[in-house]
Picture 1 (tube, rainbow, N blue to C red):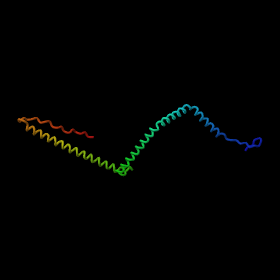
Picture 2 (cartoon, one colour):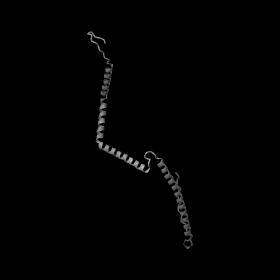
Picture 3 (tube, rainbow, N blue to C red):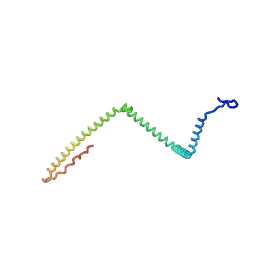
Length: 161
């Protein structure tokens, strides 16, 4: 180490780090001073918002309680579904899908068969009605030929989907 005139060692320090820290602090200070209004307004806004939340604390608690109840209800539904259809709640829905498809096919088949049966019954009733009208016309009073009553309307054509 170099010695001074009195023979005491001279210690020199590298002040670059200290100067860098000081410059950074001055920059932060300038930033805070230049944006004081914006920072103050932001803090006031935050304070107003938190006060608003504080005044609505009971309402927020009620909403959260309702959400908890809803989730408990969903858990209950999944438990009941799992009791009826084991494995559905755990993602094994193939059984349910197959059963729903079978029920859908059965309903379609029933719909087609019942539609055909109803149409056949309607035709039979029209034929009986026309025969009864002809018979009534033949048995009319004093041998007059009575005009046959109008035929019942036929079923309108259904639109196909």
